[in-house]
Amino acid sequence: MGVARRAAPPLPNLAVAAIFDEMSDRLAIEGANPFRIRAYRNAARTMQELPADVKTMLEHGTDLTTLPGIGADLAGKIREIVGTGKCAALEALRRRMPSAVTELLKVPGLGPKRVATLWHELDVETPEQVLRAARDGRIRELRGFGEAMEKSIGSAVATHLAKEHRIALAAAQPYADALAAYLREVPGVKEVVVAGSYRRMRESVGDLDILVTASGATPVVDRFVRYPEVAEVLASGDKRASVRLIRGLQVDLRLVPPESLGAALVYFTGSKAHNIALRRYALERGLKINEYGVFRGAKRVAGATEASVYTALGLPFIPPELREDRGEIEAARAGRLPRLVEASDIRGDLHVHTRATDGRNTLDEMVAAARALRLDYVAITDHSRRQAMSHGLGPEALVAQGRDIDRASARSAGPRVLKGIEVDILDDGALDLPDDVLRGLDIVVAAVHSRFNLSRAQQTLRILRALDNPYVSVLAHPTGRLIASRDPYDVDMLAVIRKAKSRGVFLELNAHPERLDLTDTHCRMVKEEHAMLAISSDAHAAAEIANLRFGVGQARRGWIEAGEVANTRSLPDLIRLLDHGRRLRK
DNA sequence: GCCGTTTTCGGCCCGACTGTTTTCAGTCG
Image 1 (cartoon, rainbow, N blue to C red):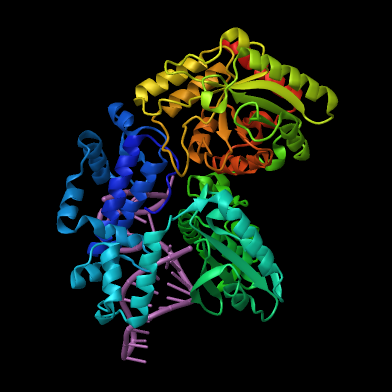
Image 2: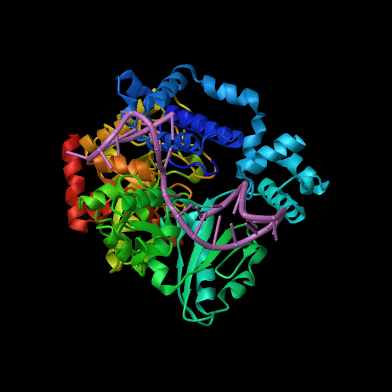
């Protein structure tokens, strides 16, 4: 599907998910039973979100039909895929249909029916061929197509060929803020809310969904399509419009009546899976939900606020970050929703860099930035010597930095500055600095920066061994992924989390927008294993400490509460927690 | 293809917009 690389579930799970997704696409183009198509889609999602390795599950004899959306047939296909790497049913579908056709489904405006028509009638299979057919005027001749559609298909395909499909949440935020501020100035406009995956704090967003309420008539749709950043108007009606901004970001605007804002917010915040589950839940109770409200028969019983929608269903308010159909409705019904960690709960940052290695600001500047954010403590954790490229610190340099930190602490009323290091985990799991150097530090953040392609077994062993060091207090960016540019290394995350738990080591949720490592599903594993998270900025510049909020968003998506995050503690409590870990590791 | 404290068969979420149409299909969210 068209999502950027995201969570890093075990690779066999991803292989199965990819096959089911492709089968779903191909069945759709063949015009198969829509519910069968959806069954494959749902199964792919189940596999993507399953934290445990399906291969291991099979080896342990786990009954896969207990998984949501997996029945006898799909369980058999999973077994086949894990065992052979192939799926005979997919091979059969591929023989009937050229391999590139499914790519066309990613083009906005092209769904399975139109793709099937283009392929059957014009024999076009690739985006490039569709583009040529559009330019030759062949598409307009097709039944159900026309000149206008030919033009829009041509332009959509051209855009598709040119662009990346999702952008980082942090990159979208400035656009969202500026556009929302612009819309708030339009006469009559009352409320402007950015909904969609943006509001759910997903690590990347495909587009922005903006909801607007107004009193009486308002020119908001007209003003929206004339926003200076708009490159192209994709659609425009009385109640909604879609545009593409100059930087390629698509934005959908919807004007909703104030009495329906809550229902519309639920609807357009999604996720789609949450909405489907919520509707089903409503139907079981004789209620119907749409974007205008909650209805019992023809009578509208709720809709002005999101809380009213959930209340009408007998549920407490479900925070947007949880709305992924990952058990939140059941938890809400049982009164077991988590009290999610908030940005204001964060008391300190346990991972920042300075100019002593590859940071861009001085120690004093980093401390000042932490003070501006009202943090109680900040740990200076520059790289160790192995990172020659970033002038990693050896024992002597570290002692010198310690003296600087003492001086900085003495003259500032700001946050307490902790002495730390981001020490490299070497190939064999040993650390890049001797124990007697690490012993003198307040905090030791251990990290993998090399040999990303070790086998799963070797990588896991290497990290587990590092966690055996008595002085390691945090495992940094545990999967090593860079969202846009580097896949996570293959590692048994459950084993790592359990080891960290037993050793009193915090698992870092690196809040840098390019990392966001751990993922939301990994956070959920940390929670279930009763391990401890640390949300850290990994700031390489003073302004980047503020990225902590993206880490909080990711943690909330993983159901994390304040008590499960080490750096929500006061400094004395944090020190006690660190000491406790050290005693566990003795 | 999945699912079931009514069911092993007959359901499976719903409305707006667009472009093609003359009553609707396709796509999207």
